[in-house]
Length: 230
Image (cartoon, rainbow, N blue to C red; front, top):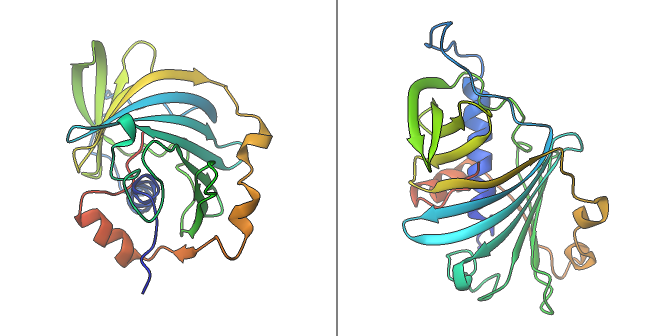
């Protein structure tokens, strides 16, 4: 049986959404005086620096809740990460495009001459702006040179926010994958034409549809390569 080609970034978001949804109605133990994380802007652009046990990458992130879509353009250091080295998909040096819609559709493709594309249907959409609601406040800490408030969400993610600007600075997942926010442009929107998956993604000879089951997510998660996002 052919294995799903769900990207590590895609699956981590799926798990985050499932856990956050499950715990959304659970009362927080924090006191009324504890600060709460700022909701994400409905639209923003961010450059993220990712470190996972020494494997480095950059993510060009476009978050667009208004239009129900999220776009990750992934570049690994010298094309060296587990995503780019996967022989079943991207080759060394290729950019990987990870395009997600709120209806659960995910396209994963390259834009080189090989015209590779796969699609996945997941049970949840993109992270909602208030996905940190109910997070447990842990106090303050200096990280990356910024004085931050820190929260923990369902033993899954630790989130650091600048106490003055309320911008996200850093977050780290339970697997150890750490995200450092390099830029954060509120209101920035990628033009609509860039959100269109290439035509070969709709060629039945190219596209492989893989519904992501809970078992798939747990199996990938146990290997520490779940989709991990901001």
